[in-house]
Image 1 (cartoon, helix red, strand yellow):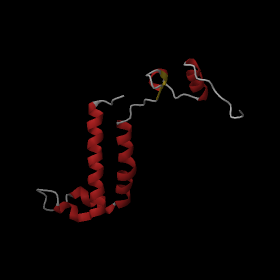
Image 2 (cartoon, rainbow, N blue to C red):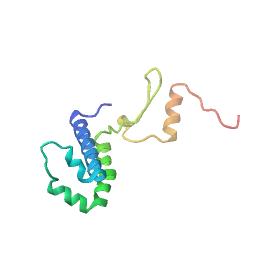
Image 3 (spheres, one colour):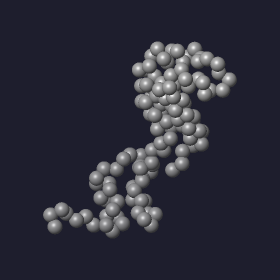
Image 4 (cartoon, helix red, strand yellow):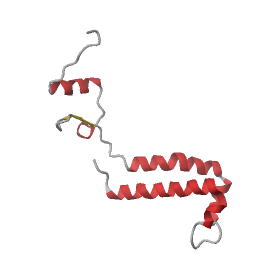
Length: 117
């Protein structure tokens, strides 16, 4: 289930932002030697440098959560090899429980075998 192109582009942009922020956190002031047309670090960089722990939390926790939420379709599908859909979260609006899965498999002719046999 493809995600909308706008969400895909924004997710990719956030991933690049995350990589840049990681470089800022771990490389320090030397990262600015590799950025063209920049002779010294910008003002916001010093704010990040003073609040290093907050920057690490944003880079490692907040940004990955945003990227995942933007690129997740919410689909959970159980499909047979021949394309028969046994269960669809998109269709039902909820995750299946054990009975839902057993009933769906029984409809296509699968039988449950007990562990005692």
